[in-house]
Image 1 (spheres, rainbow, N blue to C red):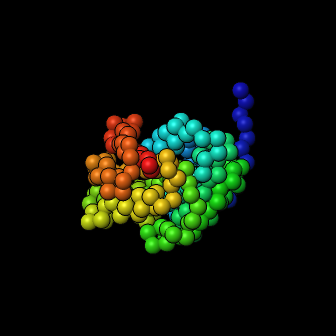
Image 2 (cartoon, helix red, strand yellow):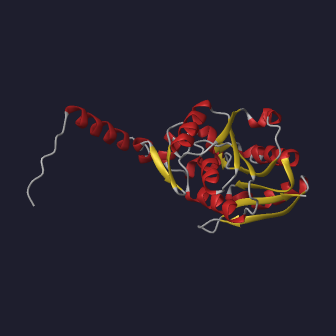
Image 3 (tube, helix red, strand yellow):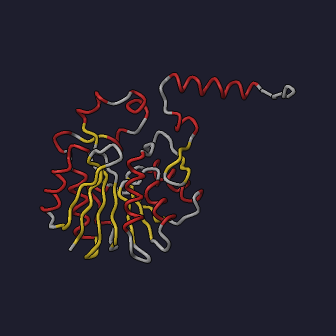
Length: 240
């Protein structure tokens, strides 16, 4: 094979050096590239959105595999990059999918991902803890991957996560660890149809607490499902 000539401009060299600088600063490669693969599609990600994890793919797969409705109404609470909502819209024919987030920057990214993945999702920008009543529809499925990493767990986390991923989407105070789940189940009581399901990704330490919370709100068939690492990770319950 002969030598192949490569045209390498000053601009190319600068881009390479910028990437190396960012890598040396422990910035996640997904942010440097600007996208990541999740479930069956590529999604744009940036410092306003979490990088989707394999555990969240398991959450999506569970909902896809369990859904028996021909055209379910679904809402994703705290959508971030939109990866859950968009994947469900792509995988469940006829699904009417909505998604909400408090971050306008995250929603801008989610809307780009919606267009690039050629699906339709209705987005809402609102603070779910204080303004959930702005959503008035009734849903068959409610899903959420809210902030659940305890502030005390920061010391166990890698620096590339701490320094670059949005803390708003990651952390919750140890003293009020279930604040988002309490709000989520309040919403489920009001906005799930009878027979509908709520799904959520959870902190592995909070499985038993989630079962008790489901009892508090009279939700039935509450279960905790382990992830691929055999950690308590997905909560599911039914409105009766």
